[in-house]
Length: 346
Image 1 (cartoon, rainbow, N blue to C red):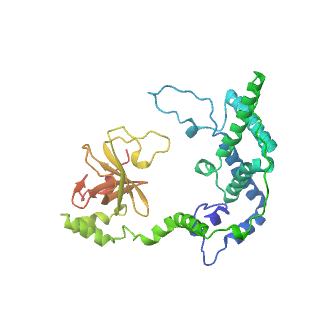
Image 2: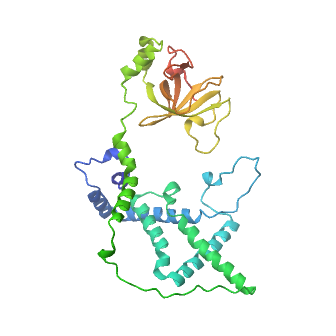
Image 3: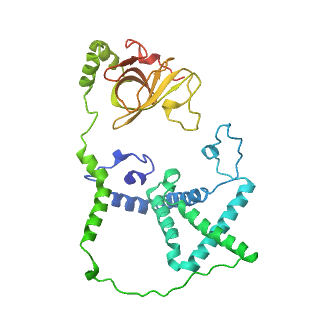
């Protein structure tokens, strides 16, 4: 993926990279030497985006219309500018964070700046990888909280001191420094280390132990539907359409929506977006994710986490289910003879 980031087009296109013939290191070096200004620009942009995103994790002043009103997700449609009062608030935040830096340096020296070094290193790695914002900010946005909290505590201490509260000085004790020798190492420590290594490796172990699922061929899936009363010829005729397919996977998050209902957030999953008809919306996952809609005015009990076979028509990034098979129970939204081209996404 990093390989595709060092190009003018086709970013995140993993098909550009051939592990047998291509080298990520050589691609990064050659592209950087050929286009130093372009590379410096996107590294700087993503670096600053990570830092600004971390700072803006601190709360801003925004309207609250009450508990009964829709949530105002102002950051989803933010145009990048701040109101004057929020600009003042940001300056206050920066001042408090600066105090936090100073106190951390005064009390702990270089040790107090380790979180800052981690933050800057991570932000730089984001820039080099050409990623930033949203979930990519989460590993380091706590650094802003950390120094902000230190600065805020120091301000509270100053205010308390002004009102006559005596500050408690830390009890300074001398510590004896001694060298660590191998004689002090105990064999049982090895078992503790191995235990942590085993816990950390469980995802890879589970992947190796677990058998692959949802690997049935199209003919196998058709045979299963045929055993549940469907006509093979009708199924094959339905699947002969260019935008028709058969899916096997696990059904997740079924929800029933009436006409004009749905999730009205800025970027909902396509299956749950507002539509002009009643439907059951859900996801089907195997090695991929499918946003599926089952048009119906009735509320059916689509079991969460059940394994299903779905015959569907694809319209853009939504799959309109014609048949949903739960093994011993079938649900059908329309005859298989109806053409997929009759579907409209409204």
